[in-house]
Image 1 (cartoon, rainbow, N blue to C red):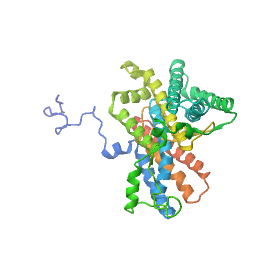
Image 2: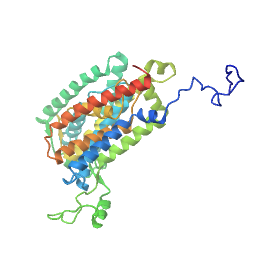
Image 3: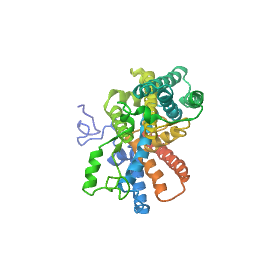
Length: 383
């Protein structure tokens, strides 16, 4: 280590009684914790849980069935939030997520019910089409250099119009049922519409740890017959997204592409390829959501997914991601989705008018943007 000459004294090594090296910026542990992207979402999750424990503890919200209800809603938000988070960290937006949900669902239903194709093939074709459209979205953004807000806003309308047109042309209606009949006996459909760990819940019910039905055909059986696959998909996507973002070179490329794309190109990061792939990931997550919905309800509707793109972005912003890109966390986005699920179902359990959920979204978005702006200034030193 090089020595530093002090005024009026012998040379000393940096940090060995001499002046601190001015090239090394000292930051406190508190400062490091405060600029973590997940911090706001962690605090928000705790506050929301405490609040509803106080006002809704006797409503069944925190019973096994109640937890499963708001956990399922949170899982829906998580799935689309993962894709939106990775894309926003890469510096782009996708406003066509909601339309992609409706479009993918209608494609599956039309192929399965009207064209009588095997369900596994319908699902594979829907994913292939969605990934192609995601790649087209990304390609247009990187080739034209237009803001992704404009390109994906156009696709929001294009996909929604195509969804309604396809549904009306093929079936003369906007809701297509009968999907469950087509999925019966299929090998791929249970990965999106089934339950797992059913025997575990029967065992827990036998031990008296969870509730059972007290009357009717299912008397004595647990009120929860398994964990829905949509929750499994949410956990898997969050885990994989977090791992890719924090443990792989590709994750570094995502941060670099959103932080300073030109500087990233100078050091060899394939920025265009990264951005296109993130649009494809967003389309993939939207199709997972759509497929799970189709399998759960046994039908597809042309109006499904409305406003989901904004809810996904709000989850990501609550999770600490900066709107300017280059900073964020998949775990934070997942916690933002959990907050949404708890609040949405909490309002139902407490008997509050459900329209106030939209008020909550607006307020929490404004607060998150203000907080994230302050965090950005702390990180960059802006005033």
